[in-house]
Each structure stands twice: as structure tokens, then as C-alpha cells.
Picture 1 (cartoon, rainbow, N blue to C red):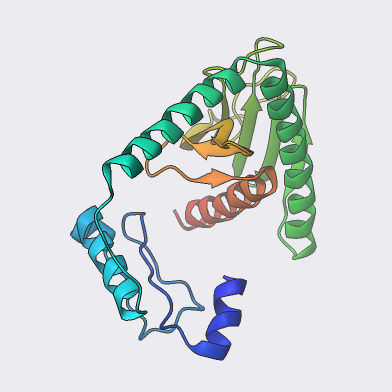
Picture 2: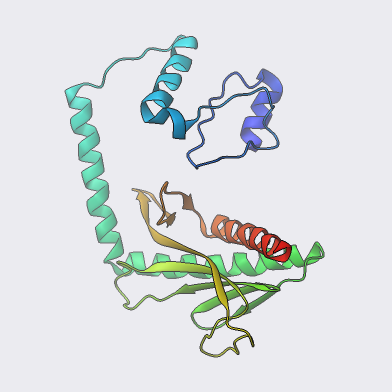
Length: 232
């Protein structure tokens, strides 16, 4: 956002093409209302590609079909990344990085909770060996991470579940009324590029988050869920 706005201040928004990948997207407040973007849900991948191609041509760029050698090189890169991802998930190094990421996420979640509290919202952060909990009455965000082995995080997800009320958890007292699950999200920590690992959503379309970004994302979700619940 900051990079786009800074450049747009000097050159306007004509250099941009916006293609939301989520269903029913909302226009960012900083984007001028006159700036249109491509409806990916309606026009699909080919429509989006055609718009991008036209923008390249408008800027005196060139467009050509991918050669066989380029296709082969792309396939090779994808295959090598897939192998590296599997090795990452089944290694001490990958497990250590995932555990460190969860600690970074936990610290960011705690710090974010303090920032929210400073704004006047009544939130509370609690933790146990496996759980990271943020409460914004009557909604509770329960995050959990259970690595079973020292050298593998294969098929291990970070779970983030929103409840109205407090569920039964080891070491905590549940709410008097049975908690109702409102939203459940899963994130896999893994190698997304050869030199970069991050949390990735299990739902489509996939999104990647650093530990700090994931903490901010979930806190924003909590505020949204709490607001919706308070209106019900």
C-alpha cells in the first residue's frame, strides 16, 4: 500500500492493475474510486492475463508465447521447489524454523493485543504450552500448534478457531454456556520459495503470511467477529 501510494503521488495510478483474487472484494479506502480493477471471479485467469498483456503493450513492452525451453525451465523450477518443500517438512531445520516462527507469531500476537488494548478495546492475551488465546468478550480466538516430532512438520497445521464463549481446553475453565464455534482457519508453515518460508492458508486462494503478518491478520479477524457477534 505505502509503495503504491508513494509512487502514485508522483505519477498517478495509471501504472497499476488491480486484480482481487477473493470473492466479493472491497475496494481499499486509499484507492481512488475512479480506478477500476479486473473482476477475477467474473473474467477468470485468461481475462486477467489479457488485461496485464495490454498494460505491458501500452508501456511499449512486448508479449510473446512461452517457448518450449522456457516451459521446460519453469517445470524444472516447480519440480525442484516441490522436492525442497518436502525435504523442508521432513527435516530438523524445517521443524526448528517452524517452531521459531510459532514463537515469533506468539510474541506478535501478544504485542498486537497490547496495541488493541491501548486503543480502548477490552482484550486479554493468555497462553499455555500449546495454546495462544486472545479474548474479546464474548469471542475467543484459540490458536494451537502441535508438532509431534523433532524432525517433521509434515501434515501439521496451525489452527486458529473463533468461539463465542470459551471451549473446553486443558488448563482452562470453559464458559458456563457451551461455546459455539464461529470460524475456523488453518495455516501450514513451509517453504514457499527456495529462500523463504512462511505461513500459508489451507483455503483457496492461498495467501502467505510472515509470523507478524499472521498475528495482525488474526487480530483483525477477531475484531471483525467480535463486532458481528455483538450485533447479533
